[in-house]
Figure 1 (cartoon, rainbow, N blue to C red):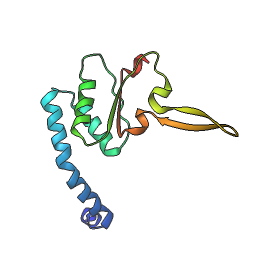
Figure 2 (figure 1 turned 180 degrees about the horizontal axis):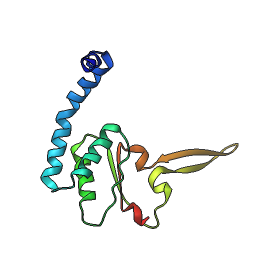
Figure 3 (figure 1 turned 45 degrees about the horizontal axis):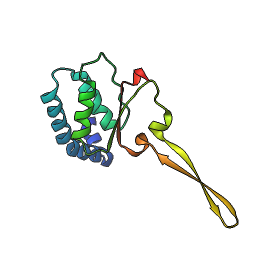
Figure 4 (figure 1 turned 90 degrees about the horizontal axis):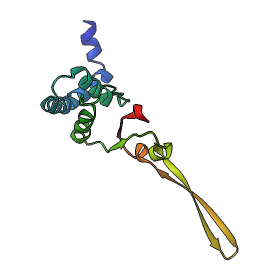
Length: 136
């Protein structure tokens, strides 16, 4: 009885409608992952949950266990703007988030300094894959 009352409330109905509209896409994404990568069910579920929750997903493991491949599958299979970056020991924060640019121009009455900010890949995407983050 308590469950049916919960489902009849407007927020619960909205949630059910949202889940119903999202379910086919998640099912298709999972089948695409399964077609390309055998096993790793826990990683696949974690990636799908992070998409649903709009939260970070950190994958760590030995080389060659399909972490990057699964990330590429998710990126290509969704309509999200994605950005891949291969981390390295010399990675600078400005390569990820952008950098501040100061422009100088001469005018008749002196000099004008303008400040601008060029946004980096992490700030312009909806899904970022930072590969080999442990090497940085």
